[in-house]
Image 1: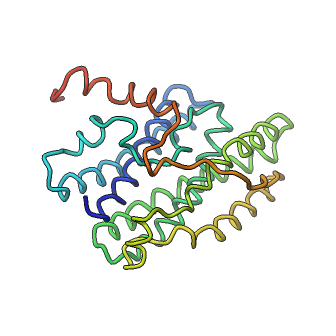
Image 2: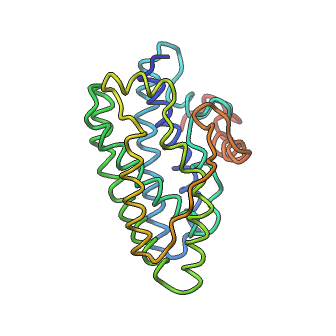
Length: 249
C-alpha cells in the first residue's frame, strides 16, 4: 500500500469508528434536538469514511471494495485513534471527546486542504465544512455544561479529565506521516499542537473548567494496538456483513 493510501485508510478508520459511536446515541439523546444533531454528525463521519474507503479500494490494486475495508477486517487491522473507540459513557463524556477531537480534526483538515495530493486536498475542502459545525456544536455544549449547574460542571470536568490522556497520540507522527508531510502531501501533526492547546485553553477558561495536567499518554491506535472496546464495537458494526456475506440491499 502506498503511503498516501495508508494515510487515507487511517482517516477512514477514524471517521468510521467515531461515526459508529455517535450513531449509538440515535434514539437515546438527552433531548430530541440533540438526538438529531448527533445522528447527523454520525452520518457526516460515515460519509467521509465512505469516500476514503472508496479511494483506497480504487487505488490499492487488490480486489477489495470499500465495504471490504469497512466490514471485513479484524480489530488489529484498524488504524483509528484510541479515543474514538472508547464507549460513549454519559453525555458529558461524548461531548468532551467530540469537542477535543473536533478542535484537532478542524486544524488538520485546514492544513490538509493545502495538500499537493488532489484527492486529499478535495476531501479536506469538502469535509472541513462539516467539521466546523461539529466543532461549534461541541464547544457550545462544553460552555453550557461547564458554566451551568454544579452537576453539569462536575460531569464535564470529569469527562475532560478522563479523555485527556487519549489526546496525545493525535500529535505523534508515525514514519509514514513523517515521510509524506515532508513532500507536502499531509500536515505535520506536531505543528498543530500549540494552536490546539491554545484553542482548548480558551474554551475551558470560558467554561470555568480546568485544563488537565498533561502526563503519560495512551498511544498505539495507528499501529493496530487497540483497547478491548474496539472488538465489541466491530462485532456489532460488522455483524450483518459477516452473517450474510455479499448480501445486497
